[in-house]
Length: 82
Image (tube, rainbow, N blue to C red; front, side, top):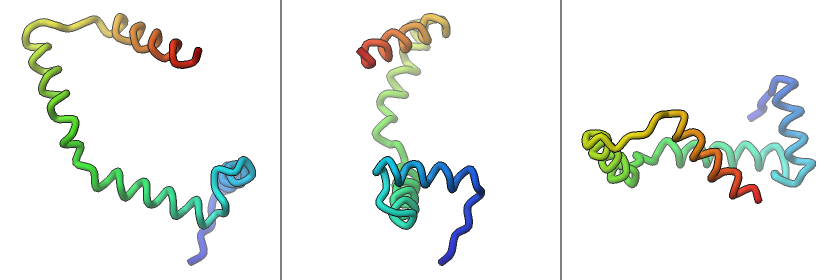
C-alpha cells in the first residue's frame, strides 16, 4: 500500500520520526491506526458511574459556574507543570 500525505502532514511525520517518536512512517501509521481502533472499540462503560454521580450532584444543586471550574482546572494543570 502506498500512502501520499499532504506536505504539512509529511513534515509533521518526518519531524516525529527525527525526534524518535516513531521508527518509520510505517510504524507511525501502524501505531496511529491501532490507537484509533482501540478508541473506537471502547464503549466508555468505565465512565458511566462518574457521569451518573455528576448528574445526581447537578440535580442536588451541587454545581459551579463555568469560570470557577476552568480556574480550578487551570490551577491543577499549573501544579502538574511544576
